[in-house]
Length: 75
Image (cartoon, rainbow, N blue to C red; front, side):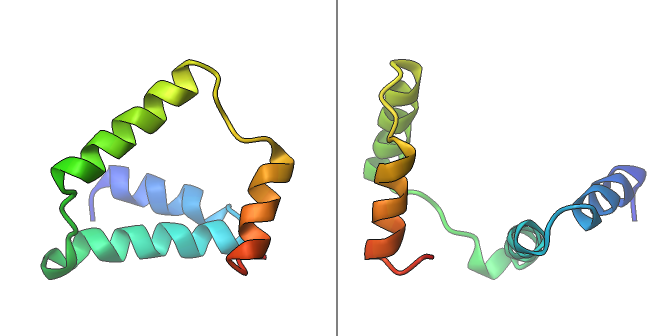
């Protein structure tokens, strides 16, 4: 294991359990090359549009985010 990976894992261990799960899933996705997802041109465009919206300050309010989470049962 590299020093950088050791450092990253040490930091991840300090996170709350939910964030540790997110990090673990990301690492597993990277390690499992068969499951790497490649964005389509349309998806890339959506990502860049989202970044442009952030740059313009066009972000959802906390209430809007909570409403989406409730609607999709993410809470």
